[in-house]
Length: 341
Image 1: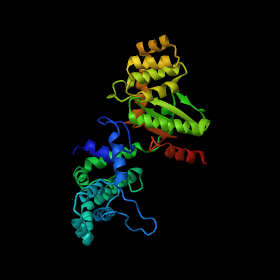
Image 2: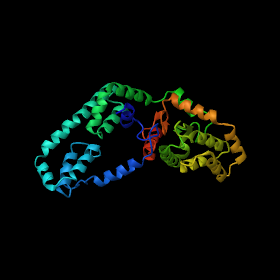
Image 3: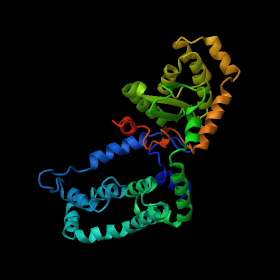
Image 4: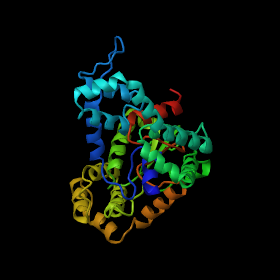
């Protein structure tokens, strides 16, 4: 297993995002539904198992040893679903043996978490993330990660450093410029968003940020920064087009159009959206023909790199990286803390 894949699974501070080699999120949605369907409900009255068959009861008991949402638990449910009831009843009769075996298999994961948190810092956000994510890993993945431990811990230390709040100079850097922004310059809360119009996760973040804008209005300042990723072929031109729309006072409307049509971002479509929004089309086309905003897009990419932006979406709230940029409720809670409400 390559380290890049391990890090992707374990070390991303952003729960979701666009990085090189990633696809969309259809599988995660289907897996989520499958998990919901497979999970047995707890009896709220007496805590007893509500499993309907001996094999479901057996699986439920085994899943008490591991995280209910872990792949190990899902594998247990799959296997027990193929077993005859007699075998499940026999397993239930000696359930402690099976539980002990599972606990032994999980020891590597427990050791990995303990070792990583000791080296990174037990009170860090990265340690919390490691605890949360590793609980869902199968033992085999933990074993593979342990074999590459030196490189893994080095990467996590870099990520922890990147998660530290930005200093005043860095905050000023990313909040400045002629790019699109809303809200008063002296707002108590400033939210800076680095985004890519071709990234599906950025569309989710855009929806979350729109909800935040509606809720807080002029209580916050929102700054949008272009960060088109190199492997998204149409993203850079889409960013330039968005800035051309901003020149005509229609950035946010154009921004919404692009996220609504992420699979249609070639030059003809970009002109089509400009026409639909009533922009001065000759002026818009000239901006793209002359690459008027190419340097600004490149400059904003460099700004992002200076504050350790490596994927999209990335949000900073008063210089602190937002851990879940696609969750409006989570963002709102952080804003409330800053506003003191």
